[in-house]
Length: 476
Image (cartoon, rainbow, N blue to C red; front, side):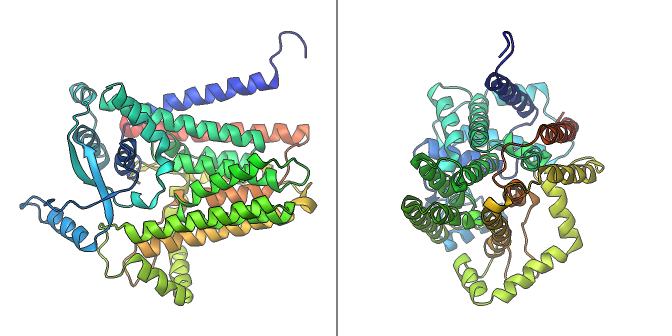
């Protein structure tokens, strides 16, 4: 290498560092609690930081204010349903999260300098109150590790609630970047994968201390590990098998619609004739299904008034699969719902209340199409067509489970359409489809590399512009 020129590794390190700093800067533009259900996620992370890995049952002495009939009815419904549905959260943290909700409810709301100063002075009180955390009990506690670590550091150093929150956000963002960096070491992602990660919706969730960015980054790492392990031309070390099994467990136990990924170790076992991968596949399957069944039986969500439990509805649709397909197809055929799926996949930010400028939606879809075309490779098709076919099948199965999960946990029965489905839920299935386009392909011709870089850079500029414009307009 000529003297004075940086090595490829050094250039890569500089680019990753710049990307991380840019992400940190963008994250500061987004006020706390602006991601869907972020209050619940932060409070669940607090419980885990206190060593309470599971949600707690409703305290016997908990009652609602007599003047608020809705809250009283909610508590009574929760008591009747039973199960784990909340926990004891520091009152300082509750005050901090509640103080940011007006930004969600009122589109024109902005904090004054005095209000910002008051929020910055909120500290940990040491006094706890029971808080409902509906929906979070289904997620395996380990997926909250970065947020919990950030909050634990804040409490240990006696930082303010705001600084502790920023520590949790920073730890989450760092964990996402670490997983994406490691994934690129195993398998360079194609432009289509990168474009999905750069969507305004994907970036907004990546910059928020919820679990969306973590599970998306973890899915890229999982698929990269799988393709590396399934490629006969590459070395298959025991660490790869264990890493793949661990990643799949964390994903499938935190995102029920990703349960089909349990098939990946068994494919590697067949492809490599590896007993190790087969046994690990059995182990992770038993562990994941055990957690899912435990979560379904022990966790309840009193937000939805239903006459049937989740297990009863699962049994109903298991014995009547045609009914499930009819409801799912009706949802896809509904023009309003289908338009919502498309736009919320690209980006409807905040608590689904902050739309991008309208012209960005078709433009970004065209950018995704160009990225997909730039990613297609058939040079290794003879070697990897089985792996590609598997990924495509798993993507379709994951999409089906998205509708099933929302049908049995969120939609009142009997249903005509599935309620609660959002476009961001399709990010990981779309990433699976994106990897189908290139398979085992890593090295491309110089022309293809330049084309990919050009398309990726253009899409990144477009998406970052859309995200920045929307966030500045909405919150500043």
